[in-house]
Length: 348
Ligand code: SF4
Ligand code: SF4
Image 1: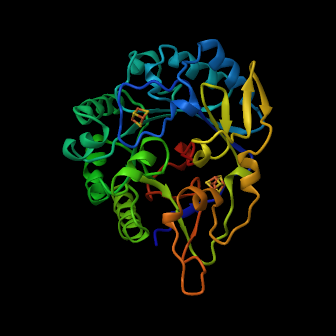
Image 2: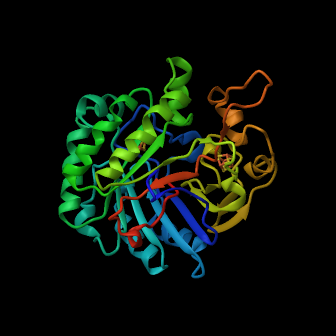
Image 3: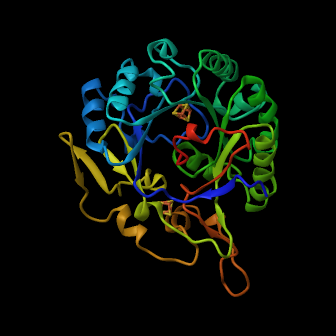
């Protein structure tokens, strides 16, 4: 095993803010998890973005903010949001679909923006574009190239599904060619559009066998090519400890309608544990995700069992073959040469 391979335990004293500043997007990816019935359609004003960032600022904690949408670069004031987050001492990431609207590369700088992440779901247009849209591959990779040339720390997020898992290995030469140093492999979830697609079609989710056969091996090859790789743990080994991030970490998934979730699997349901009302963070009343986090079950993650039971299988005694880890638990493999001081967040 690579000596730099490790499961990233949840970091005590660290806070991750996943801030959806709008839900609008120029694309309509087939697996989009945005659900405007639950998350609203509004675009937050610059003033609101700044006030809400202040709610989560804590000088005693390492705080990472990830600006999301929709497509966050559609927001004309994103660069001011980045400045404000930096003033509050936060490490800043923007997750973009690659269109980089409003001249983002010129309006901010690599000094302010710690990471710029591009979502790409295939190593070429024939794989990526049927998932993310016609012509998207070309625009996304051209902007990725531009960002690397301008000195930004660029990472790529690849959402693995049945539609693209067989092509994952081909991402390595592409990332090498573009000089991308970090690669996040995500697993398709049953949220938003992917939830609907899974009901009507064959299903997007990969089987445990497919995941275990392909993803860790490709991750190792990417590391050999000098790329820092992060991917979800998903299946716990017998001796692995199960922890629910909703209990042991400080992750906040903020939406423009003021809902604040602690668990991304809960985002399609009105069970958010917190809410921002008149710029104040308050606890929600009634049944919330907090109540689910407390349930201790043999299958590991309780929300996975409730929402994605197909991921579970049992032996003849009725014991789960694998416990499912928290979806926020990651494995990370760093190349020997990787500058660890550059790591900002792994909870993505
Ligand atoms: S997945 Fe992202 S880029 Fe695609 S439609 Fe949804 S918000 Fe837009
Ligand atoms: S994914 Fe499961 S384990 Fe993780 S925060 Fe949600 S309920 Fe808890």
